[in-house]
Image (cartoon, helix red, strand yellow):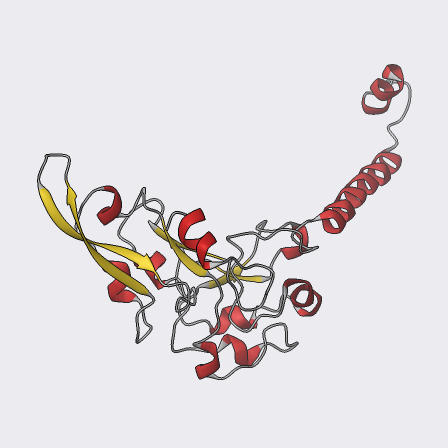
Length: 241
């Protein structure tokens, strides 16, 4: 077996290299590997969910979405903030070039439903602006280890100020904390209201914490998938929010 492998990749000088055979075998291996990736992807089968896979508002459930999306890019062209970008490897090869929201780059404009109007196949369904304002594409989650009021007893309420909902999905709680220098100060610690947040991502995009925002949108709670949910108890205690 060892000699055969050695001869295949390093053939003797008196024999011509069969590039045709090598290319056919190589293509076959790649094809089989790709088929396995598509077939076995747990995300494609709905067995698990990528927290960072945020689809545009109005998107169908993932398996139906993938069946209808033709990667035309029309939703990306009309997005006024350029938040909708082509997916790369968020959920495997089957997802490549499908539209996802990159909220570290931009956010879903609250008063816009343009992407829901231009999809030619219905992968993103047509919905009115008022309907779009109620669609959850995910939920924001505060990282207490990075959030300035939580982690450093520093004043900051940028996420609250930018939340576009009239009733504000981010609430502030006045809390007295002791700084590293021993001084007691009152800071406003942010909390996300799971019932109100729609996952637009402007809080994440505007967060002043560099490198990685201290509040980030995850796909859990998305309207399009009733299985990708969690209870209030899980959200507020299990996630430490």
